[in-house]
Image (cartoon, rainbow, N blue to C red; front, top):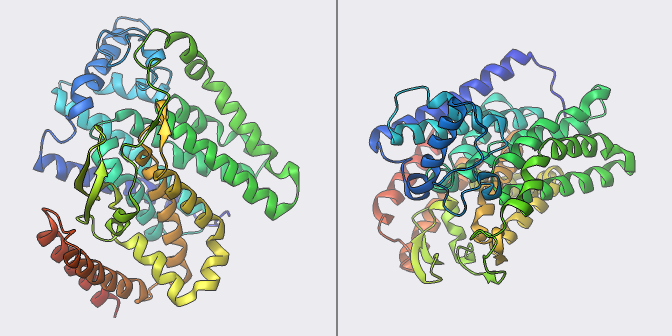
Length: 425
């Protein structure tokens, strides 16, 4: 739905949301200068990007590198965004400065988080959300536990591709809007290209699921098969632009360790149903299956999304359940489908199903925004947040699921929820 407002307010709000994310990351970086210089980022991601910057400086297309984790052919490895204009441009720009490796890692991740926040903000604004609610969606999308603890600090390919998923969603919804110009089919094309070339197979699956969901939703609403034609054309154009990335994989991955991965189902890193209270209290500790298939006690850090989102959705069903259900029934279908996928074993390149969590957080933020949009200024979400934190904390201590950080984090969240509740009275 288009909103009739001064577009400069949107641009300024989007930029401000991105700046908030940058400031938050700089605070984390001040606390730990090596935060973004971690594990895969340290061993293979940054050495490859240094080689990419060197290749461009010498006038060569960066195709081969001895530093890749799986195979020396970067196009076959896929995760380095070899065909992404944005990834290459940001890499070349960052390497123009005399940064250390940890600083280069931080700059690369923060640049993508900034763009991710802007895309989520614009997606929310086009759905009619206010600037504060759109900023809320942007913060949840870019600062949730999975993005910070895995995408931004370990698996850069996940962040490099997911950065553009809210943009692709935004472009697809614009292509479906019949009130826009006849060239509206072009909106999703560049963002689909950037998602696919970003370097993360899981995000391509997220994009395909999003396309299917938008198509079914639109067809049911309009009863016209041609209503989705502009979106389909734009998405097809985007996949065409990204063709070098996905067409090169079958040929260039041959003989690599990536090709020899077992086709058996992987049971590691599934989201256990018992971990879902971690949406309220991230210190909630249950057994997760790690990379070695060992079930070890672990906090639900990946489920952290700032408390407001789950509290707002739950509160919305308490105060105006039927109206909220009518407004977000399709979003709820998508939300529960993505959550189910987080818990199901997968195979090959799509192992470790908790990688669906960034998409889950984005959809949850949209649902929460719709709930808060129904009744701005209501104290009900704050009351629900305080009650949920207290009840979850009580259950956590009864079930001995508090973990290492249960004591300080629980009281911090109770305090924050209490301040929110008092501010809404």
